Image (spheres, rainbow, N blue to C red):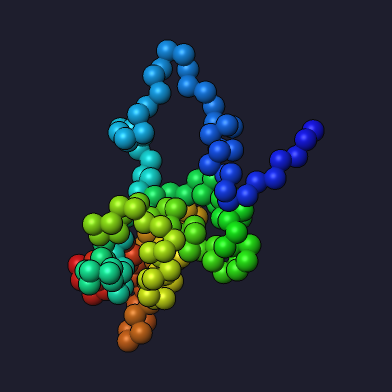
Length: 163
């Protein structure tokens, strides 16, 4: 069996070559039109609100966004990224940029945007990613520091203290 070396430059080409061919009776979907989402009872996208927000070049703060469930490809792709090979800490930046589908009005979230986020927002997104992909929900158990009573909060919605 012959081995093939994969680099970031030829990843898309390799993915196109190895993708399954469409059935003869199905027309290939046009790239401009996204496929309609089917409801299967599986939640695949989760809304979130960043603690600080992403400040873009125009001075607009983007706080609300959405993250989709990660696929195996999302987990594997950063492993061959040259930036990750040079600096393993960059893995979370690449991974988050692949699964964040929207950030405010921004729909093209790329590694450059995640790089310019505040550290508190990146830490929030890393925890959010783990909860969504490992546990399947966005709830977290917390304890009140005053009365030591336990309760759950939903990390995806609203600010702390709001109902």
